[in-house]
Amino acid sequence: MKKLLHLQLLPLLSGVQNFSLHLLAGLNPEEYEIHVASQPGGPLVQEVQRRGYTYHPLSQLRHPISWRDIPAFWQILRLCKREGFDIVHTNSSKPGLLGRIAARLAGVPLIIHSSHGTPFQQGQFRALYLFYMGMEWVGGLFGDYIAFVNHSDRLNYIRWRLIPKRKAVTVYNALPDVEIEKLTAPPRSIDKDAEILIGSTLRFSTQKNIVEVILAACEACAQQPRLRFVFVGEGEHYALCRSIVSAKKMNERILLPGWDSNVSQWLAKMDVFLLYSRWEALPFSIIEANYSGLPVVGSAIESIMELVNDEVGWVVPLDDRQALVKTLVSLPQDPAQIREKAEKAARRIRELRNYKEMVEGYLELYRSVK
Image (tube, rainbow, N blue to C red; front, side, top):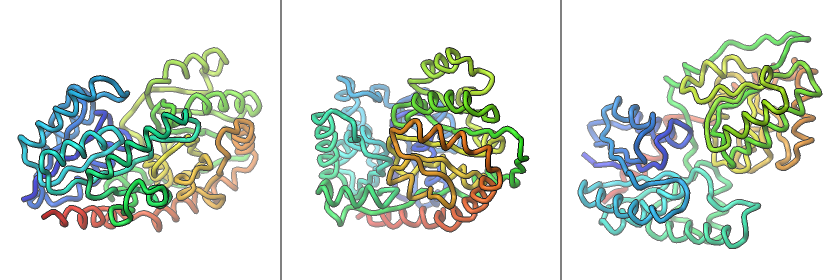
């Protein structure tokens, strides 16, 4: 039996954490002894323990770069030495860097990192951009493979020489059948003069561009009385977004209910899904929305455009609020188009994403352990 550690940063149940849970559910428990480590104190911990996996709290692990990264590194190193893992699989940028270095120093035979988006992004100060790029290069030196969840990031890393081609693979995110069954909803019936509910399930973070989205939603509501919005989630910009909605007197039309792990019940209420992120890897939220029969309004970034095109949704240029507002305002005017794109999106996602292929992709890497 192989001893496997999945290393996460935050103890949430958002896209990155659900990726681990979906993958681990597909592994043979007689072949793998599963361990999960993260910052303690969140719903991920309860879910890991409910499934019977071994959980390890990393009390020093934090999201922003800080002096705590040093004791966090030593915590991970001690954990790897104590447990003698055969495989360490890291997720997210900070655990990816600290975890890969610690695992290599601890003598872990196989080290895999899943890239759920790059830490260096357009709009950052150049020094910070180059620093993050350098850290990704360093992390690549200590790992055996990076599994990218889209083609564009893999090709970019190879082109920028952040990782040799032999270490780079693409394994697309997918959902297990039990999750798909929860999401499947009957086709929406949208009357000609009915209100349109546009929504999202997301973290209220800079990455998700949530402040810009809220401002656009307020403008769209002011122009189109048949629009309503719901944004399900929490995060560092949640209080600011609530203040904006309140200041614009849009509390009745733009709902911010907080986080709810029962995503399917919210998706079933929506007519259109919205994800206008600044950067993404391959968002589970869009996959979930498509399985629920929702067309998507997405930002024109490479990873989102691997899932969203003009046949199954609407692609809007990033940093163009007026284009986003115009798209949102136009939606109630053509409910037939919404239905058509919804049907195509539900069919297409079943053609693009396959859970068994995702699990087999990682098993091929796991079985390479010596």
